[in-house]
Length: 206
Ligand code: SF4
Image (cartoon, rainbow, N blue to C red):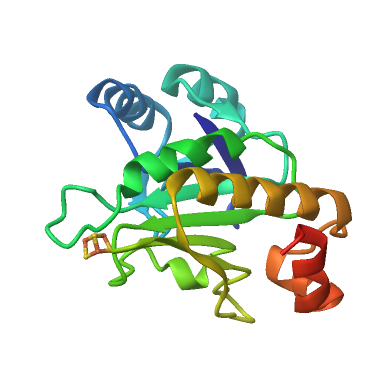
């Protein structure tokens, strides 16, 4: 599991990691390390765990004992998904998300959040993620370029009625284009705004 260590106001570190799927074994290891080196835990809307109060001199030991490693730099911070067991689920959000897990660890121009929802109720907020896949009766709808924060943005529909294979292939094409053409620090939505939607579609061959 990749984590980011963020220095806090008081000089201590907070560790953040995507914990969209935690086994009891992983959880136990992290809990033991938290008990030893940290003060408390919170969970974010991105299904990320935030562990506070790690002393700088303990950061390395914390990672080692919790079974996590620091992320190399900007990249996919989270792939969040809702449980496919939900009664409203129309597509397998977990299986879709697991296909996109491979994007973690790839260096990108800026951080990226991905979300997959099993139905249009959009509990994972697919429309406001850099990449969002929403399950519908006839397949997945791919939203692109959304974000929250200081300058929130609703993602645009790139394509709908996608099978899982088609959705994965199109996301990979978007990522390749983004890696190749975006400027350092430029989020996906900003990149699309700079080059223009029509050019973006053309570059993707759509
Ligand atoms: S998005 Fe739909 S399928 Fe997923 S948890 Fe919400 S209601 Fe259930």
